[in-house]
Image 1 (cartoon, helix red, strand yellow):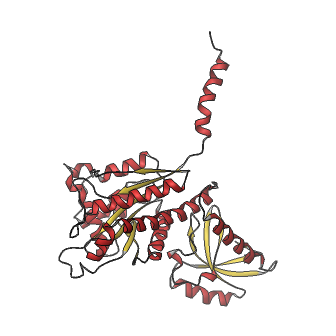
Image 2 (spheres, rainbow, N blue to C red):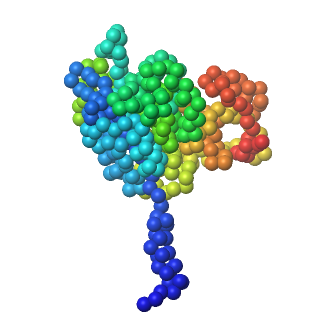
Image 3 (cartoon, helix red, strand yellow):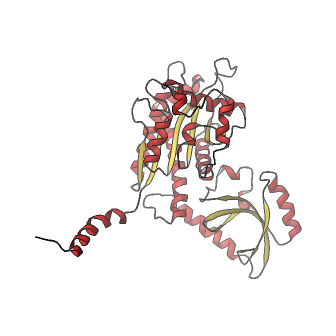
Length: 368
């Protein structure tokens, strides 16, 4: 039987439309560092590659169990060697929305504090601002030396040469703000489970530079410290660390969903978020009609930040508010009816945020 052109088009639409009509899931790429012939850092008994994989698999399982609208992709899910370039390509081909590379830290065997150093740090791509950050980047990047003819594959990059890291100065990472946001959530939740907070840091990691999405590299703790080695290699320790990163993921995804307008079916933190929004609206309504007030704007973010975000460390959280403009969250500090009082607040805020400035509000809306 011959089909008319109309029937053919109708048949094609029947099969094609549902594919595009379905909403796209959030894709998180979990990258257990090292693997196979690359064991990573070592303790008295434990190996970094095993710790990284244990935490990564537990994290992925937590996310999969909690979220129906999230696809979890692993760069490796067993003891396999995967190059840094291949890890980035796996993430990019999956069109990831967030890349989490999991690692375990260590220091040189000659270091005096080798057996006492401890704490977790989360890195984003950027320029190293200390020799310590550079040392971590060099160690994590040195895995490329296990590959044949790595200089050609990695465009002449030498992980041991300080000069090679100039390429990261030229790399304009458009996802830096989101990466720092997620990194702050991770450090916040590590602190809540009693881990020492070594902060959000920046350094030149090849795997972060080559992923086209928000990306972080988590250093769980120091395997060279016998106490931390025991914790890191234990099932309970890995579970606790995975749960902390999972909570950070929940914070980040909540902000991402809010920003994109997506509905969240399984994120239990929405209720808390709604309560905070109600409080903010009440504060705005308390401003008298046609009354001009001054606030200090000190930070912008593509997504909503947690109330306990590291960005607000050392600040009176009761004085922090935000407004949304052109899809961007803009955070303010304090409120004054007199501009001289606002200038005093500005001086205080600039001790932490040098680019802070005064803005005016009238009836809850910014005056430009």
